[in-house]
Image 1: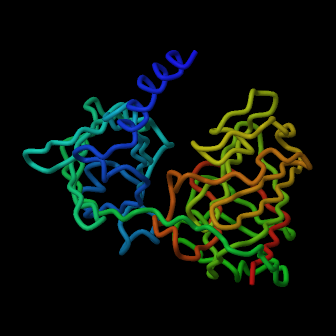
Image 2: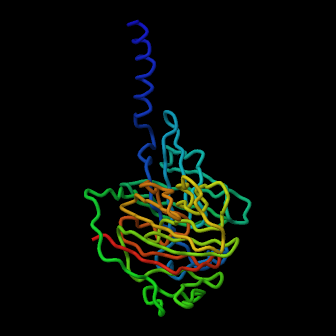
Image 3: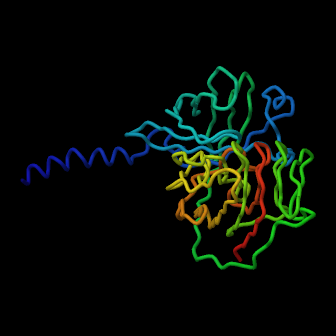
Length: 325
């Protein structure tokens, strides 16, 4: 028996040590917040829709790099459009001291894979991606943990709806209107962003959409809680109740289109709880990173609430936010 135990120790322990040991390029392992600098002519070439709020900040992105086996790196990537998608392998070129990977396009009508190449120095990424022949520069920093040392203390609730939409920055292509006390998006237009920025908060929402519509609520302007007509479908991380591309709801608690529905959302650090129509569908789960369509990737800062208006019609008759103190 002692010989058998010793044999298992010889087989297993070296493998464990190898899996944990550093290897060339392993310092990249972790989560990264990225920002792309994209010129106006590149936007026109790529057919990208730019929110006015992006003008001086660039476009945000996010990347996670993980160890697979002993020395292969894999990951996930979120661009300024679309959802989190897998990266089959992140390669490190020791001779040039650069990393590179490629992923297929998602919601763009282009043929070639998107190629990334970058370097890491002093915990700072610099590099570029090639998208449909365009070379787009980016930088990146390690993602903050957002851990909280003490439980939140809540302040006074804030009503974000009034007849003058005074809590919101109104974009030029705005389609939102206040109609009989209901904030109504009449069609595809700009996103609404609160003037005030928030850290931790609780959010109480009543909303309604017509059949086939799609919208979303961005927490701190970075994490989308999906709103979509998915009644009767099997829930996933792209459907109502989910954190878009990251966290699926435990059940699909949606009501049919045309009925009023409710969200109760709590965000503390990066941990989120989502109650849809009285059913807790996400319970204190950490959000891995920013979702597609985010305002920026500066996760360590407070951020606004953003209502998605560039997808479809939606109505809100209650939006009450209770901030943490």
